[in-house]
Image (cartoon, rainbow, N blue to C red; front, side, top):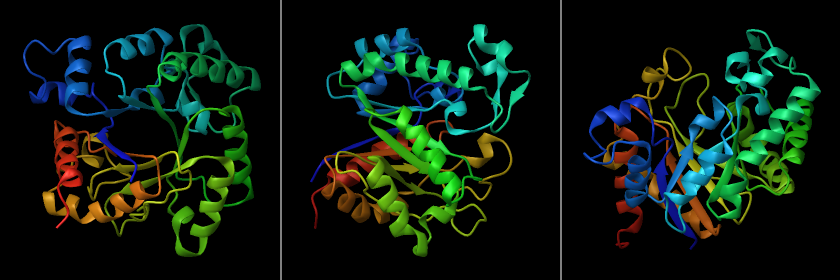
Length: 292
């Protein structure tokens, strides 16, 4: 069985900072990360979606975490076709877009520059062996089909050589009649499929699958089971506290995925107060408990 690393999708979320999970003396930027890394072995850099990460921050993250710690960096929104505010771009690139860049509105020159800066920012993590994966989360309108497959191929060609994980937000990718095709596509591209956990029975619900498409790494993200998924503010969409029985029910599937991969990352995205880090700590205990 491969190594199982469990963590949260942020260590800097404002509600987490206010929750009291970080002890006194560990509430500055360095102290927070050092404390987090003493409790959990992997974290997702969710902020990478909202603004380009910086090389300097990556260098500091390497300095502040132990050998074996992993960062899964979420790709900047523009790289996966999400609408992106011009204000989210570096200051010297903001003239390339006014207000908001919608689908297909970014020029080739802007895309080239953004890809280059993102790649440069993660170099320290790659060189230090701290980069677990770059997470490409594709939007809900990215449905299975020739156009989506071409866009995915073009994206992953730019990311060649990176450890890539792909999360589809359109449920059609993992419907029974499509699953085999999706699995084969991601395997051929050398990408890790991202399994999910979320509320079921909603229009955008993703099935609770744990596919393994790349033996080096499997990834499962727990989004919480809020019925407000897909609507309302972030606090409502992700406000959810898993109980131990819900987590225990997912343990057999996670262990199966770990048995098919060298490393499994289990990441909690129910980032509201300390719900994600507490769930991660509970899941670690469940996964390491002796089997009965």
